[in-house]
Amino acid sequence: MTYLENRSPFFNVRKEKVMTQSGLEIPNKVALVNEDLGSIVGFVSPGYDVVRNETISDLFAGALSDLKVAKVVDHMDATTKRWKRQVIFDDGRLTSEITSADVVGVLLEVYNGYDARTAYGYSLMGYRWMCENGMVMGKKELFSESFAHYDGNVDKLRESFGMKFNAFHQNANTWQEWSRTKFDENDFTAFVDKHTKPEGARAAKNQYLTPNISKGVKENFQPLLAQQHLSETKWGAFNVLTWLATHETKARNGSNLFSNRYKNMTRLAGDFYSGEESKALVLR
Image (tube, rainbow, N blue to C red; front, side):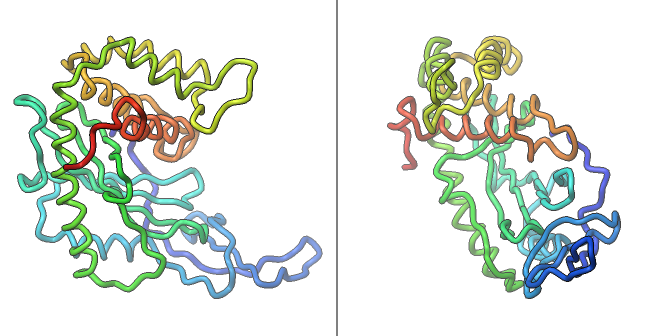
């Protein structure tokens, strides 16, 4: 949670014709230009409806007006094409006690994009106050929603939040059970190895970690458990993964949230829900 975005996500976007070097206009295609930077953020059809980041920000601010917000952090990729806003709540209605010393709140991640592929929407994540981990959620269909068309309906968005917040509180039951379920270094190693690309062989779909990254993840298990005052449980293992995603990923330009390393680490944390190691842990 240490990334600081110095660029404003609330820039104007204009459409411009796309031309060949010789001056021929390319049909059915226009460029979207960030007016602040004078740079291209995407190519779309002429009829593409531009929904600005500021419009989405205002919509979500209206829908969240009755909740207490602790912090807002903006993230953009290198080209300013994609934007994410992480909203961290300090509201007792949105916190869950996992253990007597470990409280998790809600982190709302709003997103929008100018590439004609990124609809606007949001995802709910957990936020561990003790170490500022952003914690991905299992069962993504329960905790996220995207919208193909902008309608400006604050009440509809607020209703959507209500359903997702209820699912979040139910998910806390899973984390509480994880805090009592043994998961030692051998279990963690076996889980990471299952998602590691084999040397000299074709990788399966679920094998996406390079051997070097896999080695680093496994070496961090015991040090991060000690640093975060966690024991060898599923809750501890999950927090090792979310710490690595939140604090140990970087992008060459722009926010780490758009880096391949972050995507791989959040994928690994998400797979922690759906793999054999946690198949018995479902929402109650």
